[in-house]
Image (cartoon, rainbow, N blue to C red; front, side, top):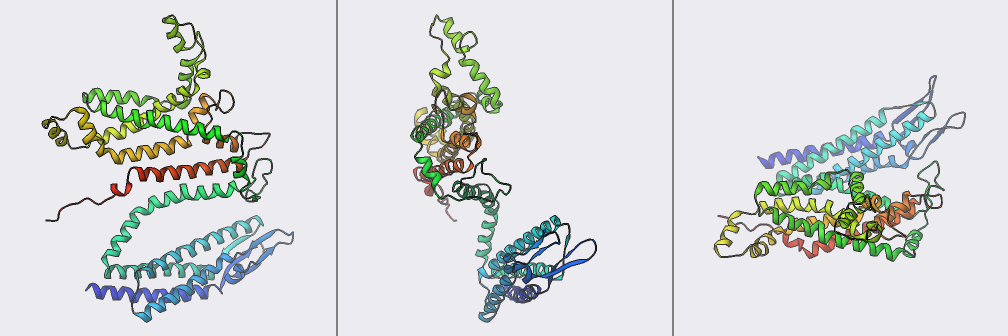
Length: 471
């Protein structure tokens, strides 16, 4: 029965594919749009005219419509799918990639055609005329929809024949939204940043057309590595990252989780709640509190305490020890994130393991070393990698606390430098291209560190399938 159903789906898909391909090719030669003004028709354009770059202008010289070779994709898709369908018909077998290929091509062609029509409509509107779709463009959209249906039917036929392929598609579908978000919010911005870093775009040479970029190659990167303060900024970033991550975001977070899970549950909850206060406090208020702590007498709280014990040396501590307070300010915020994750992971460990260890005479440290920590590899990997990337790109508290000083680049980190180069005024110009170069190098460093963490924590071993005995 399944074979009969699969054969029917295959035949239906082949028929849809051939019919829709023919319609896509024919529609390309039919009128796609008509441009009209209030009184009379100005032009009726076919798909091939639009794709060949037809340019219509008004009597005043304004551009009314300009074609694009993008529309050649529609008949090309039709030809490709027609040939593929005929090959499938000759070999009497639809492969697993026939349907997916048809679906992908039809979606791409539909999107390009839709965008092109919208661009033409906008351009015609600027010329004071209106753009109406005709039978050709409607036929092309229907053909592409038919091709999409053909692809779905062919894919269904393959799934009927190969259930494992259906499971594979299900996995892809499950990961699809996450992949889309990664591509849109990480990969594409990184590509745009790389392109921008190869330009000299700045506020002083910015034109009315933001796409008019003057590419200068790797000049910005050469300028970056030749910067006299490059070693200092790199060292500051390394110091900030290692100390804050090691002592607070991972180290203190793990200690807090271990301690609060060993004491009374209610007391542990209250203690963790107090540690969350720095994270939920607005940034400006949080920094104002720290600045009040380090102020000179009679306002500074630290100096007030020193005075109570008879101390005489009461400076402005942010100038004396800026790095101490930069790390403390960021560390108190970062520790709460890891603390919550580690606590949840510890609470999920089966209590029977600890009970058995106590019966065997294990000490608290032995249970932490031999039971808790090995079972925290996943949370440790996530917190370490996430907090590394977070610290690498964070500069908010440093900007509010020291602005990269005191002095020249004393506490300025890489991300703050990228921000200042791109969005602060240097000699009357925001240097977007140069700032993008700093930002792209930071992205590369982040990717390299993430790969190193995956190696250190043996990510492949963490991903091994559970060994469950089959009864």
